[in-house]
Image (cartoon, rainbow, N blue to C red; front, side):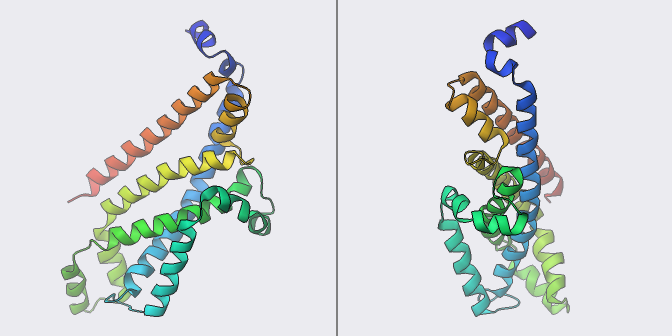
Length: 226
């Protein structure tokens, strides 16, 4: 079996340690930037839904500013965002290269997308439930947690799945400018040195990650749907 692997993937066989390290770097970028983006995205998505016209805390100015900012950052291609945020990354984490330097642009690139997805998920909550909670004297915070977020758990898991899979693509792109991870591994060996077996193995590892996210998310959706 080992001989067959060495024959089919000769360049990968000599770089297994580096492949493992690159996989860990990608997981690190995903977990840290994904965790931060999840929290910020939930906060911004909830703020959008409660401050919009007809929301439980209607504030047109707040909604208008937030809505425009999200649209602006969503419209900037991630490759350009990576370069534009180099000074900001140095200010926040002390470096603009490596896996740590990639965290800031990954968060900034993910939050606008995820917050818009959260807004969409929360907008599907039955307005009758919101009105019923208000009539029973629930506070705005109570309505947010006990109605909006609780009733939207399956939808929030679904949009988190989509965002996490999108984030894998962004980490690979970050690798193109020195962010490390599987993207950097595939570009340095697969593209620049013509070692196509490295590219194929990298694709397989990324597909496995996507499959785990998909299956894990589907399991949670089944358990929380009613």
